[in-house]
Length: 357
Image (tube, rainbow, N blue to C red; front, side, top):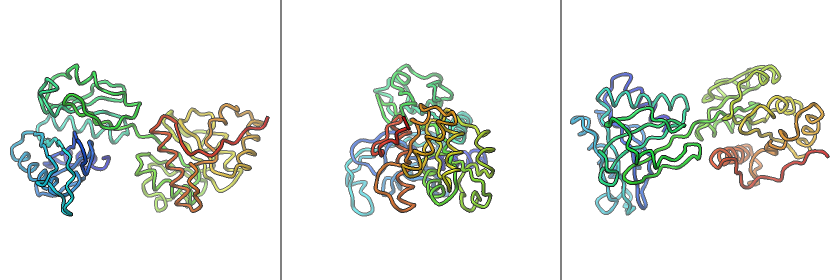
């Protein structure tokens, strides 16, 4: 989604005509679920996907007509024999897709606001009226709410009906896309920062996965060649310097995830000293249980509170029997995603390392 919205912003900023197609409601078996999106350009090219097959081809045809006519429409598809896929599969579900030409100034302003929130990693929810009868209001219409449920933009309407706000779920609960009374709610969660301390093999493998899992990756290492753009091409920040100097001054927010995977015991201990009690949402550290126990005991003696250390996820990663670097990266990323998406709940965790009496 992030890439498609950025391409939408690029088109708007360059005055390039484009139709924005959003899957707003599904029922039964469908190749994509609500929230999927696709851009269609006047030459018939596209970005994103709605699942391929005949439906996508028909959406593209209608999108080109919408670009010509300039009027948004909601297209409905019943996935029966008329819309089987190229391999003959018939899903049997239903899809409703809003096709918007994004031409008038109001539409451009609305979608640029959406793109700005996307670029900044801010959480938003789009409420889209796709069926006027059950909603009792005009269709289509779009409303953009921030993470505090405040209306920040609207399209094809002058005010948000009470029905729209009544069914708006708090973004903090990380709801999936849902629909109620002819209104689709498409949440985009606020992106969390993942601070990786240690740019070795595990840190590199985790960073490669974490970007696709919607984390903004920062990586720290005292070796400049290790935190190179070549090794971490998609990281937002690549920071070289001593652990003490960097971590003592780095910004830690309540949405920061910290992962300690340095090349040695002493570096891990120093990193945890600077991160254990800084208010991060999550702090995790790799290592054997013996090493973790030794580090915890040392840090207690250095004045780090036991309460802070008890919140540290160590050993790092859920127990999937991982042995190779890719497997370790998968176990760590699974833990990060579960912690983020389930309000701190992480199944499959190894037993916590106990502090010294």
